[in-house]
Image: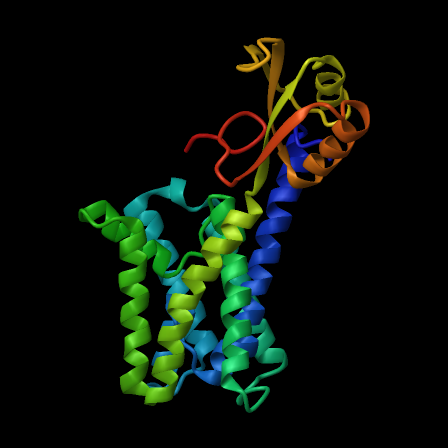
Length: 287
């Protein structure tokens, strides 16, 4: 895939945004609403509010998200919208459409713990996709961004404070069990999302010590379409001249390089390290 082509990149990026938005909609419609799970976000607040007023959670979710988008544009400027606007509209409208086509008024199973796992897991993965693309699902994220602008609170703390307030409210609106599930979901979502983000960004950092770096570098350049850094070194015991090749690769590329070195330069010494924070050309840019 030629990511240098702007149309290819646009299609790829918005395809991922659409996938994340659909996952958020399905998770909310299938698991959150029927079980009254409310571990933050506008969807969680909609669950709580729908039990107080006689309006469906999907309708409340749609109205609140539209209002927050408008407030966000006014307070934060048009620059913040972009991907956030797209994700909010797709996920919010998706929930409403699913709710109209097939309303689910009760849990799918009699096992709320299992349904909580799916609700948390799907939501966390979708949120991780968005975070990895510097995007937002809107909703309470907009509230957190406004709090950050007008206070000294960090955005992570602001989001958690808003979500915690919504989760705690389920103790008073529903029952103790639902409240505990909601709090569990809130904490579990953070843990799963952190793990998902790390795995999405996971790369392999190679430190290769060899006396013959040319075939390795040629393979990296021509077959893997990556660059590498090479510098001279000396063995501390033998005092022979060595070359150290440094390269960072995606996991699939790392498997190919490791296999190539094993076949072509079996005497090379390799150290392979996991890294989820690679910033630079070909990976993530500075924000």
